Length: 426
Image (tube, rainbow, N blue to C red; front, side, top):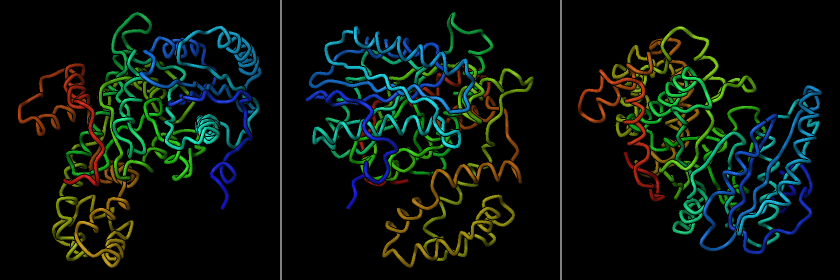
């Protein structure tokens, strides 16, 4: 039977040096036209050493065959400069590898393929060591990290040997001198939207609601291989990748903020932080997010699962008549799919488990977009976030500013790390 690398890897080995014998973490950083890449690498250098073992950092400088000539020239120069820097960089438990992947096929070039190149290389190196439980950590070339970043990730995986992957806590900078006040306000709005969306899914009863931030996730080598590795999407690769792991038993969270992504503008991908900040700066309206009414409908649907288990067709009858969720279920032939799930399960518990593997995070995203277009228009993020927090906390937050609301959401998100568990209960 072919190995993962024989079946899925895009390239043969790109690093000639043998892996460190006691390496425990491989940090993978995709980089496209990143002027401050060295700053992110130096942030890793300032991390505390692991209590045991060492770290390798794999940076993938990459561009499409159709990239502007100026970008190609900058990359060639940056590659040489960082190779020299890496040879002189001194850290008691860290080694850097600077990979140069120019002129990738335009059809595939992007952040997904760059992550895949680095992560496949990490798999190859862990396989050389016979260490399938080695941890591959995703980071970004415009992010910074806490001094305890490496230690806390390593400690979490040590304490939870069955954990296949984790989502890692993050926090964007909300003030400072590096960016304008407008950018800090834009990133405040965007992060509030992200945290509102996460809490709304949890409040509705979705058991696999986790952050999916490309610079803040980690996975064991064996789990990466078992799930077919990183995809080659040009945007949203982190969402699709991590959502393969969230339904697995023992998936975990490191909730304290260890990663600090940049709030900068960007036009390089059709969605994501950089694009959201750019659009917020260009708009004169309040920042918008999904209506709380959409999540009320989801909550009603999820709360009715015991009833739908007994009679799946009831999810389309009077209990949901005229609602967006009813229309959406009709569109995706929901009752038939639920009947099929019931035929292949022997109890409500197994039905519920398989149901949420079908009605997953992607379906939730599709539903809230459908509801936005057909029934519940977007709302101002400040209003929606205040209303949800009031429901969850039992006291009014209607007068709070976006910054105050975000601080409250961060308090909820950054509670002590969650231990991996079996399939979560409602």
